[in-house]
Image 1 (cartoon, rainbow, N blue to C red):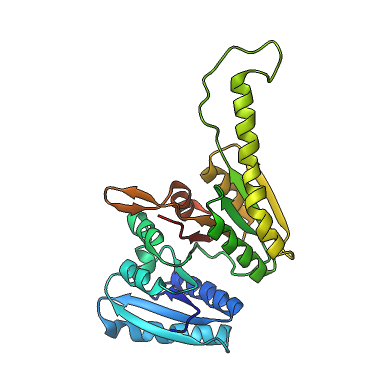
Image 2: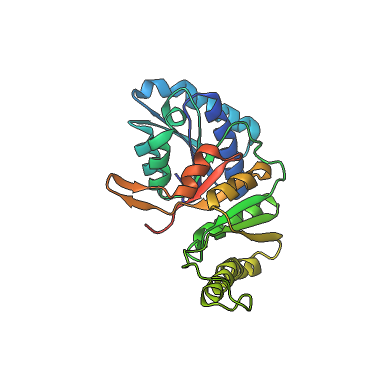
Length: 277
């Protein structure tokens, strides 16, 4: 494949067709090649599915270059390998087999935790391009790559960017209420932490806002669990962008809890951006 390209996994199911449409639109927005991959036990099975995919993409984007590849083996390993060097890897959920059918439970988390490029998981029949904003779930200043991807996605789509920063304060030993409000050591500590936490989005997004002046950015901080807050916000967004935030587990690298929850329950497609392990 070319230096810049989008990869999509297909298996012939309806939801993989939706993922194919999303991937084609994303490749067209970027002006890059689309790679269509089918992981199968027997390569002879791939021909009709890949041919149908090329025909569908050609009708949707006649000028878009498309290459196909059948790979004998497991879908997770195949897509992890194909994601290396890709601008984006796209898959669907809920299929009758192959890549999309296996995107449940541990397999979906394994794929999101291992891919080398941002992973877009397409859920249901969500429209590919309907003018809704991009949502960014920001957990801290370490999310620079995630924030950059969200800005670029909003810019490609020509839509606003909503940034949601969620935090819960650490435990502070309770103490008796002071005679003068907000002057106790515990209260001062909590207020100082609140100011520090709320400043994270402003500092981390300031540089990107300057680099992308055409993007309307709406940023807010909520004092609830990040997964719950983001789930509610996905109801009216085009796509939600989060960092992978890997966790080291005795059985291998696992996905962080926010991305884990969104992959299973988000109301819109989810873009998971790799972060430092």
